[in-house]
Length: 237
Ligand SMILES: [Zn+2]
Image (cartoon, rainbow, N blue to C red):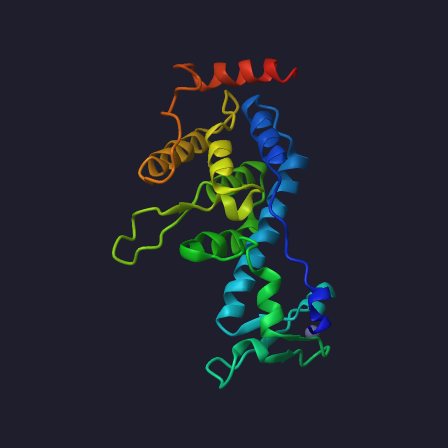
């Protein structure tokens, strides 16, 4: 094994509790801006890494040693070369960092870093989030991202196949879906965020392998505002 893997630090997914607290603070109308920046930056780093994995698969591997010194260097793979692609030794022309494609591939395998059928969502957030200036713009960008989907059928481009939450939030798919379904909304929540949620739930209900309780069953007809107040009491806030 080449020692190049030591320089690779893939961004982690955001923990559920941070997202939950962010939505609770928003619902109360007292947005926690420090937490918003924390969640937004974590998601941004994560999306950048998802894009980096996609580019590497396409032949453009970023040098992770240069990146740690804030230099962006691309190492070009020889796609279609003879022999086992895993044996290809990648060498950074700037700092000399080396890794085989096989070791590089192992570094991101099973880490939910594949862009799948949601490339545009990840690329858009990676590109645009740093330009979000106000807390409101940041909240909307974060909320839109975590409620995005993979669309994997070329002949059915409108049919969502899988929520992207699991690429971004810690946990397994059923946990993350249930978690997103139970986020708190209230008086302080922006109407656009409530619309994202309704659209998300509509798409989730059309994915036959995901089974959630019927929409609204948890709150038994409560308005989102009342629900958030009750949740607030339950958590002793
Ligand atoms: Zn380098």
